[in-house]
Length: 161
Image: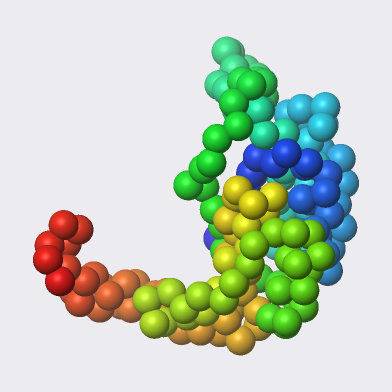
């Protein structure tokens, strides 16, 4: 089970506030890693959270008995890191929220098995947003047996179709 994860953002506060809105939760400052870190809390029974750090901050291992710490790198790159998150909103509301923010968003069907809304936070960081219906599809299809079936039907990368 995923309890929390972190992403980098140009405007960590705003991103945390928008994700909190998707969840029906709340956003708060998150100072342990950086002076401009924010956290979106879903307010659910699992303590689901998304930490949002400034885009130029990376986590580094600390020596001895200390927590990992943030370090500004001055870089502003795209990333493969993404998450699939549940929302209390329906698809039109998610698309409207994305339009309000000026962030690209579109419905996609992953492998013909489950739907997601690709929401591109700040136009650079993908979050897959799943409505209640999409969450049901996901739970039905992303299982160990389901994955085995998928792998058996997909040719290896580089194999002509």
